Length: 451
Ligand code: SF4
Image 1 (cartoon, protein in one colour):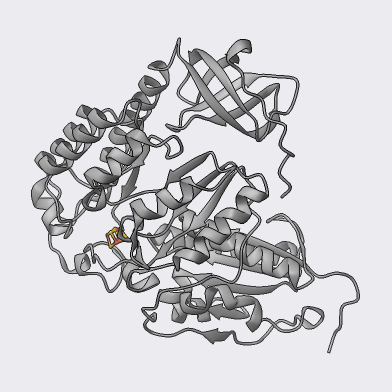
Image 2 (cartoon, helix red, strand yellow):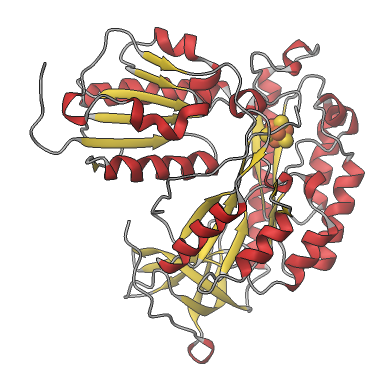
């Protein structure tokens, strides 16, 4: 058996959602502790950990491509695949050459325990598979905390979903909804604050369903607000049916909870929403957004829209376009419908012609770009607090406001992890441009985050 004397290299790659990104960071931290040297994805490596997505066929295709690409520059690399594709499509993955280990979502964060010793990573003729058919419905504690590589640290509070939207594979890939033990997530948040992370993003599959130890999402936010040093608490995507008035009031009054909501619309047509098994109407969605805008000044608003769901005729699409146009979104993410094996929607009649799906996607994306520009334009002349996060690039430092406006400021110094008041002077579709307002400035002397 070949043994290695130098420090083994590990490369990690994530496809899909923010939750996957958070989990990949945790796996990276564990591998680092186990003696691996982390190298950037795309560099020669001894181990690739691929955290996959199965929300679309495209994501699965990308997983296969990433493996082939890695084996080209690192033909002896041990390939470990985990995540939603490993959970829902292990048989397909087993047929792909070059994979050595497949770990389903139940065991994802234990993946390093299933690796051979780091000095004995050997390619296998057939992959070893660790996967359960169903995912246990337990509340969970995490014994791994990651060192996030951005100023915005993801904090996982929840996993799984029990909603069963007819197009969605997530309930199969990640199991029923379950929440993280409250004391455990508060401990991680305190550690992040102690390490100078100023913003955390609450992540999960359906974070509005957080219920644990007598606490719901609002209670979690109130507890997090008390942590000294944490300045911003941001929510990732949240389902419309879980956005309560209590949450909106909290957002309106909280000095820390960011005025930002990403609330998936999916469709503006009631027939399509019903076929998707979404439990709200387009009118109820509009009412919610209007209520949120009334309560929370300067709200940054994003959404997801699905195009080409079976039965989406011209009238249904027009209704979606109308809702998307009428409401003051800052942007929307547009997803062409992709039939996922095992979901209820695959049995639905009246598929939409792919060429039409492409045209509708393009229309919505163009509308989203116009919305983004309008959102950026609305800020011209205003002075806003910006948390800088990107280092110095091409003479600019970039960061975000609480309502998720991306702002760049010409600079000769790296202001990463500092907050400054910035007056916005110009805007493009990509970002707003501004200058630091000297007297309103609040600089920070916190250490620059290490990755
Ligand atoms: S709410 Fe619907 S779309 Fe979102 S994860 Fe659950 S089943 Fe999927």
